[in-house]
Length: 269
Image (cartoon, rainbow, N blue to C red; front, side):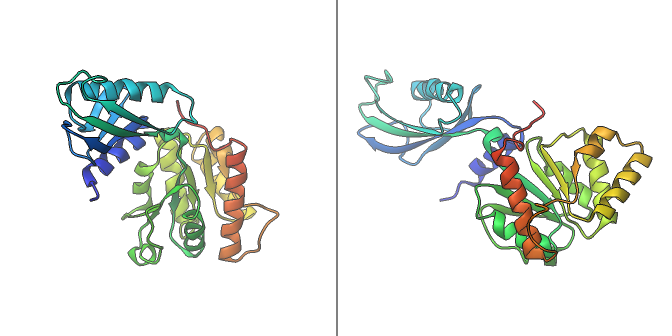
């Protein structure tokens, strides 16, 4: 059964850029302190949520979690089988098997898209086939409802696009493709005013639109460093035409190339 509280805590830790580990009892024999399937979230600071039995078992789990979190980032999971008496020094006479799943938010690829229009409809469909998580922000429920249903895609309806800026974390890829210049500009200004420095801030549009946006931002005294960080037009310039599917393909191509080159690994830390 889906544990919505556990998923909510995972979201909070991800958003706070806090590495964590989910420990699950996957097998047991004899007397064990929790049921098979029990889950708990551990961070480097200790037990964060749930329980796999409490007491010395969770102390030993924390030791294992600390070891895993300190390991190389290629370490994503681990399995342990412990005798409750011999290995954990508890009076229960059973044996427990545990699965450790490491989550490092800096390793995740999260993409926040402002706008659910024609290009976004195609782009989201491509992105959910990749190893990433997408949030699509729009003021129009009818357009958000057209997006595919996927565990990798979250739709977020707002009354004003700027409200979606609160969903951006420092390691996120951010793409602006709202209804136009008038709705893109407030989002850009809100991002700048919050002090966010994301690894990719892209905006759909032409060279002409890019010049107008940069000119207006400079007139509003927005720092040059932020203005220069805006990638507009987005997409691979050598790929695709001006139709929504091919624009979407060119954007995916650009993102994959940048990710491969390590350009999407920046954070505020």
